[in-house]
Length: 336
Image (cartoon, rainbow, N blue to C red; front, side, top):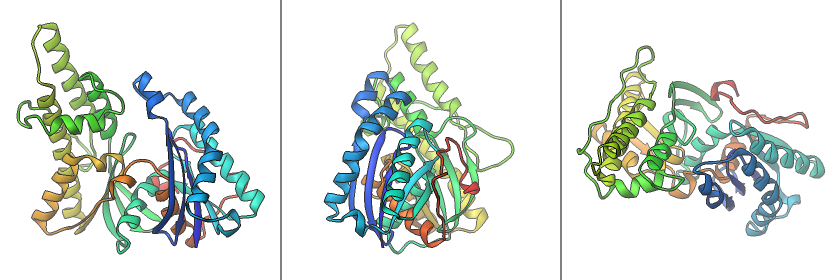
């Protein structure tokens, strides 16, 4: 079964053709990073306009690379939530028009479910149930994946997402946007023990995260040093920050796994490409004898192949949309 998938939730215009939920026939991504770099972050209005300009070309390229025609496509999957509302609307509107014109089933896909499903491409033998850590620029969740289309969120950030903190700390240290990869590169050259940053203690749900305090601690450290005319070693700050975030993510994930009885662990989302996070989670899983699954680097960030993978399982579960489908900026995995 071939699914044409469209993803436009933020600043990547993407289209892919995926067969049977795991075989990627094409995966085209038009990035806007260079333009948004000028502003230090994604400008929603610009992102929406670029999606409008790019989407026809990207879909055509995906079909050509897959050596497939629209007539050979069995269904069209599209990210409809969550994300930047204007950006989502471009993909949703285009997918609805395509589905109507070609009389194809339209499958609405949740963006975070797509990130999780990226692991089905990299690890075709992976099957639910399992526990998943989703870490990206906008989300930090611990999710029980009960089935291919059923989820229970057991922990989430109460303020900033981990990826958002990476970008803001990177900006404070003078690195370009998007900052995650620059922090990762700098951390490899620095000392993880040079600085001590806070590990927030939260009341209530023990699996929830809080990263705003760590971000603020780094900003204060850098600003105070600047005001005093003192030099800081950026690589040491990056290494210490990355270690702190990695430790917190792994600590909460392992606690949830132990208490909820999971020995199969999955990591997903853009921050799953971070070497510090990958190494720390692997170390903790190895220590406990847990199975660990992480996506290939090319499927960590936003892409349409992951939407095609999840779209396949959503299609099998009977999920369909008509011309009334709308984009939704915020939507929990548990509400789909």
